[in-house]
Length: 118
Length: 395
Image 1 (cartoon, helix red, strand yellow):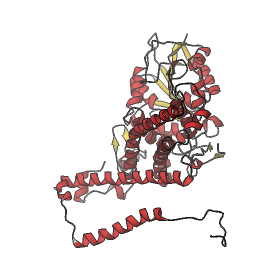
Image 2 (tube, chains in turn purple, brown; image 1 turned 30 degrees about the vertical axis):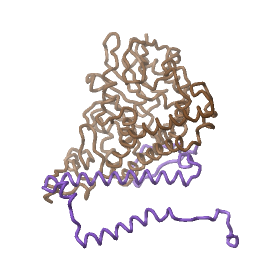
Image 3 (cartoon, chains in turn orange, purple; image 1 turned 120 degrees about the horizontal axis):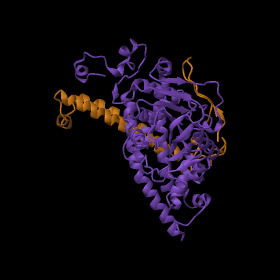
Image 4 (tube, each protein chain N blue to C red; image 1 turned 180 degrees about the vertical axis):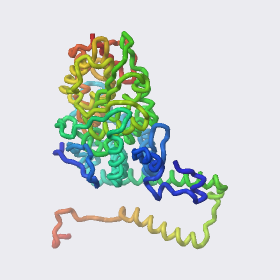
């Protein structure tokens, strides 16, 4: 297990916190390769963020409903040409950012030198 | 508390544009800085922003779902044992079980997902409070010397290593993070979704336990101690039940008792919080009518547990009792434990930061209470559903 360490926060006030023994969870590999564990961490974090945004959307819709804008109106909304253009560009950016990394065809193990790329 | 209609009308200040709105202005006139940018839900101050609350909502939902993932992993384990012609109920060393199932993708993924969710749980809260550390520390400072109740902090005391681990992989553990109380309170609310399928937002689980604790035989309850109190939720339940009693709450975590005191002041509960060791409380002999603890012993080494039993016996008056609420273990351990159950217990100890839980489950808990002089009362009530009966009277 880790050695003792401490946490600093941006304040000059007393915190009454003490040194503690850091857990080594950041070094755990359960799925055979650290990149796989990291990927699951990212997937879960993304999943949480997506839900958080969906929940916010529900709140916004609930408030809009109080003002007479219904879920049916949202369902039936017809984007304008300007909406479509803007959203298409955002969609392209989002899809590329999230999926392009999966297509990477890495082949060089870490020990490969400059002249040895056969 | 933000007014939603005036929000739409544009006449109110948006809470999101000022992270320190809400009751701050009103509380400031009383000398207390009470930061509740989004108000409260009953006893629980809402998380300071919607994003954090929504991330936490996710983690609670995850915990409910993960019971299914864990069942699937358990079924996979049974399948592996069957494929290998091994009896899953036969006693087996942890190492053997690890070799058999540790690398199975379904089992490994269940564990990985659980820990990833745990890490999201903590990091979201930590980042939020750290971002305004000075303001939230100022808030706690404004409560430190205020009543009702009192707060005793001992920043110069030696903090023993056994208390300094990151239990539940909570950043800094109970002693090492300035906002340990905030982390613990908001984070563990999510835990209860995985155990009972519901949260503990109104401290209802602690209140339920406080209400079920038996009276001493003579009915006299003048002084009570919550030993290893964390943020004092059991103490708060006990003070509500026994408003005329002198209630003390003890924990080694300075930030934990500090947060507990702050919350108790907000709740109007007169509780004396002290930062001391459970195995060396400093209280006089025969001082308390009731000493209770809530899920404390599985977070201390066996040797310290024994010291705590002895200390609890010493400070309890004859006729009073010590009731250490904790996981079923020792003579009350569930009789049949599968190989997967053993694996999960080890895994929880190793990767979920339950540093001492393995020792706890191997200890003769009731026997050690008896050795300390506590007379067990097997007919006493189970004060936390599924956690057994540990009522030890001092004669």
